[in-house]
Length: 474
View 1: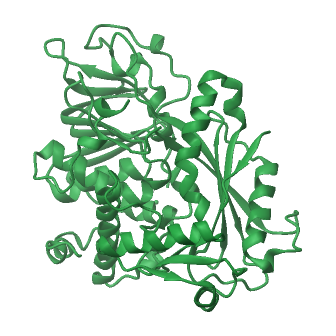
View 2: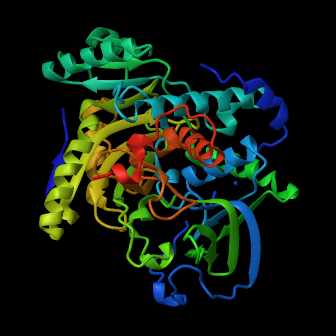
View 3: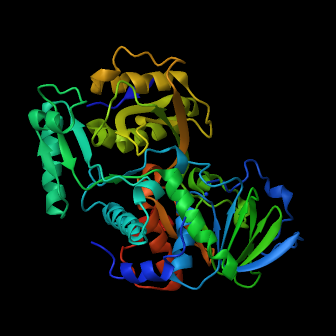
């Protein structure tokens, strides 16, 4: 295996929404069945002549029950009077959502980039949600695993420190609180770190983290609170098989699943995560498959019960983490020339945090290997050894069966240019995509949901959708 190590505002309507939806609060369970053949349903140009066990009508059908799909459903439910159905071939959190570290970070984002406003708006909406939960008399640290830890983006060479100092200036200019910490100040803030003479960090004190599984559980239960009104339904372990389209104008009129026909009046939102680029023409109900440039990017995360009393005060990320997008473009380009190389495209960067339960979460890896979700012990070993370089208390501790650990594996939905795909599907009226967030799905979920809702409802838009258009992807 050729391994490459990449080294060195609150909403104006918040109170009103708290009061209106305060009783809807406080569950985790994928969408497109692997291997569904388009031959399993009768082919026609648009409308399917099929018989299903049940037929139901909704305003919006969401395909995919990861964090994006569930928050899209939530946005329609709390922000309009539309009814929503969520379809998934499995259960929520079967893709990338449940396997991440839960960072809601801006420290490694770049001001004025295409994704900056989407990430910034997403963070604001998560903060609003945490405050809303607190307003209802609950503790967001319990409900969401919410922690305002701040982030440290760590450099260990003079060149990296110079870039981090410039990043701090850019973040400050963009309105974020950020501070550059030289070695001595960094040692005071994060005593668990190995601090060398050329170690420093960009410190963003307002960055946060949450527990993705708890957040999804909360969002699911909010969604389910609308079921008694006839406005929400879930169809899990019931894969979408085909979009039903009008014979007159081709617009989407519903979704056929294995067991149901779900008619839709307003829209179908496809938020299939890493599976989005592998939906065949049978599902799209088109003459040829739609080119959605999303592919799975596997990641490992090591979760261990705290060892030697290690307590990290902040979320940690090494400088090299920011280079993963440039590296991945090279890896994808090489794998297209030689598909065998795809199996060997691996990058590992140090990330670490202590979660709300005191567990140590160590990452992370990025690898193109299809939909393989098997644990790779060698990758786990590399993550552990990389963490030992930064956290001296881990040195000398072998990662053997005596250590209580859990390996999380997720498939990130990767797009070559690093921008998610959010918006209408060209040539298929009333169909929209919300996918391709890779490692930022959690942090951008609420802002993506807001953007999709605004498109369907023709509301004013906070963020320009143009950079995220499918048509704009090369």
